[in-house]
Image 1 (cartoon, helix red, strand yellow):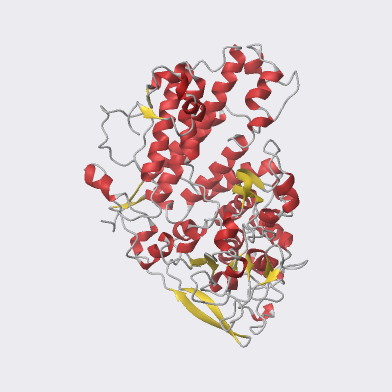
Image 2: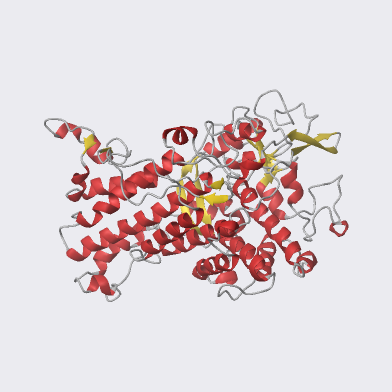
Length: 590
């Protein structure tokens, strides 16, 4: 991947691969990079390689390495990494090194040649529009790939927080690969610089325009609205635009300002709040919060009617796949519905959901009844987790997760390899109306970035910067306002939400509440693993479950966690450190 002669056929340039028999003699798969100058499809294929490997999971993965969930699959690598021995610099389930650098190599190749590509012979303006669209996406993608590379591999080396080597030009056989790591701050600065560069080329949002609304740059070239709509119109929706880049910046800023990385001085919480506030202006702030955003994955009316060129729903900043499948249900439905029950939510997570009145279940004011533990709870609990007796599936089948259930395969620790190990099954991300007998596809809507995440980023940063009720970073709302709105839309806290009001008087109590709300709202979306690390929080909380016998609920230990202190940061791959003596390993890893 580090050579300028790269293999693209059979990956994204499918049209050319399918026409191989048209050429005499047959084309070789190794194409010289100069082909991109006369072949826009080839040029797009170079960049599309970086799109194809974006690290967005549409099912829970890293959650299984946290206190939120476990897997009933003993071979699952995220399950195995929690014992403190499987996660090494050679066996690393979260390794991003090779894939991210391969993507960055493609993007550098593309950016170095993009200005020379004959994008469209029909019009100078249209050619410029195509070039700008692809260049903007390429810079944004490079920033994203650097971010995910940094998140997985930054770490302390002799008291200094280091990042990864920054590659801003393509490499070939003559390149010097023995490069030292850049500092963490240099990496954050470069990521933000790439996002800023992308904004020079991309629209705030894709959509068709009418004649007279062509941006001046293209109008001066004689560009028309029809040409603009071809390059930046509604058919481009789903690609990166200005709204998404604002969200990327908010994500990166919160990450860099967090306790684990704050020593690098790359970002302050004040700045993180400002970036999040800028992103939230795109939905009108708290007033624009989607009232149904907390259950977007099961909003069947929206999902079934959605077309790829539609504007995104109010909750979604960047969507992933929108397509028909039943793979999530195959993996996670209970075995009585022919699923494999793979992701098992923990009692730890269940206990984190408050009562409907907003009080934690540990608070005497909550009214929690241990003999009837799922009643009068936060509605998000049953929206995200299948608890004992709740129905799921096309036929609304009640699921019995009790340890003394001998009638179905769904009970605790049945010897089928598919039953729950915690007393709970996953509901979030799944469609409630899928039938696996016979298996029938249903449309699913994958969310890469939800505005709820950005609201929570703002709340966290604003509270840390100036406290619960301060309007920070140009926003006309506070951390308190965000959390109140999130809880109210879920039906938590009632009209007055006294628990929230008490927390709003104390920055530390508000921090605890914000972190818990983040845990609940974003559960099973692969945030918890990274959140615990950036907060320097406890990684070794034992994963618990519930054993129900004769209607008695007993908490049980399911899995212990044995992370070492140095595992707040991931390793540099062993093979890379061995090859290059200028590449230092993070402290603690071998």
